[in-house]
Length: 72
Image: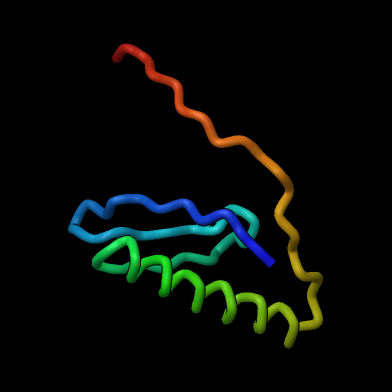
């Protein structure tokens, strides 16, 4: 299974990540590589908790991520 990971720069330094298909699934790290490793662990733990609670495993729907530049 694959999930899209959104990575952001944290204000205090480092990075944080979220999984749009798994609400509440977040992690962080000092580098992008560490953040990716940590979010993988978070996804596995999130899915295990869902399985233990006998909840449906979310699948990711295809979506498009875009950027729009606006004047402010």
